Length: 400
Image 1 (cartoon, rainbow, N blue to C red):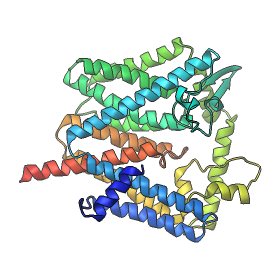
Image 2 (image 1 turned 90 degrees about the vertical axis):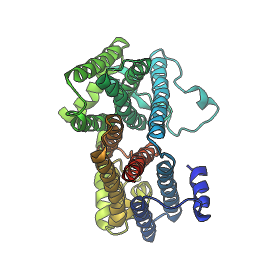
Image 3 (image 1 turned 90 degrees about the horizontal axis):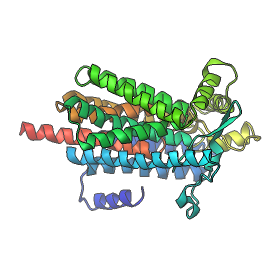
């Protein structure tokens, strides 16, 4: 996050690398300008400036991934590494869940040496009908972040399974990815994150729509139904929180007995919209929603978050910052769709469409939780931009 952007900045100043993908650079400049304009009304300039710095680092990281991944082989390796990282997160999630069920300490082993979490894993205990369950947060500070990350990993993992089924290549690699899919999907379900569930549902449906005609067939669909059913059966066998999943969704969408978190989300979202109406142009300063809310709206709360990331942009950076973020999102989606339309290789199209669908799923989930500002989302953006990069180079080589 710091070393790579700094290194590339020095190389850029010394003219050892040339700027590429000017559309992304322009979108990034719009975001930074929107955040700088928000300093005009900022109630905490130091905090707003730190947000500007963090945005520069995340934008730089995505751009560096775009510059580094120059071939399809490098792109495929990056996706496999991401799946392996997700599998480690999943293993630790299941480890925490089993430890909680046996009454043992759920703190991760390395957390005893590095105290990095502001929210302990035990904070995500959930009770339904007198039964207590743990929504394991694994290496992340919040279980919803774990769900969002695993959303991306599950969709990428599914890509390699579909590729093997479509080509009827059942090599050891296929069975390895099958095992990882069951592991990652099971850990994803354990998070009981409504926003992540919605994101995976929307992203998965779009993924099926994009690839249905060219890749999927009845056999593949049946295989995935069996996989999902097997994951659910494993969870039921180990007494996992199926009841907790149903309890949260039932309370939120069916009865009026909404969970406390749902009510808070609604209050914070309404407050964010009211703040935007009073500060439409430049907002109250990037990163200042919590301080403004606790100072001017309700000082009885300990914390306050917008959760809806789009309302967060509107309230903190005004219409200028919001439009900059929307432009970047639109540019990334447009670039990937443009690359997909040019692709003839089925494997590359599958992987690219899974990235796009994971990104869209995260965008939908952002209505209820602020995933967009997280590190792995900018990794996702960088991977998507790299596709348009090497596809462009391949097409140029073919023309010449």
